[in-house]
Length: 90
Image (cartoon, rainbow, N blue to C red; front, side):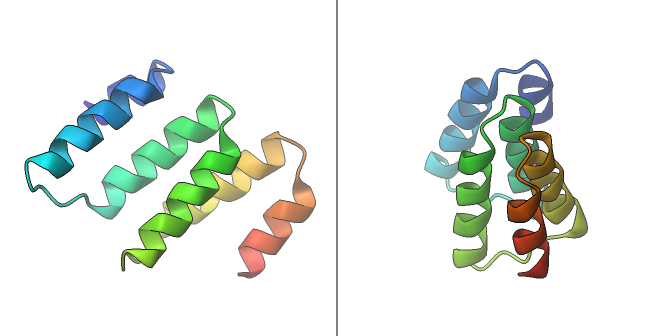
């Protein structure tokens, strides 16, 4: 469901579902976070995607290659190649 909302550029609806999941006591997976990060990048909210990535790491989730690549691609799409390089370096 999250992926469908994000692909339709309805990231706000995706976050609504995410919030409901949390209220129900469900724990998001790295796939859940990666889907929301991708959705944010699709709609041009790359800074918010980076914040979500950072929050995910702070919460103890280990990012996968998809999450990293999504952020790097998002930064490149907004012409922030220096940001992408810095992010990739860690």
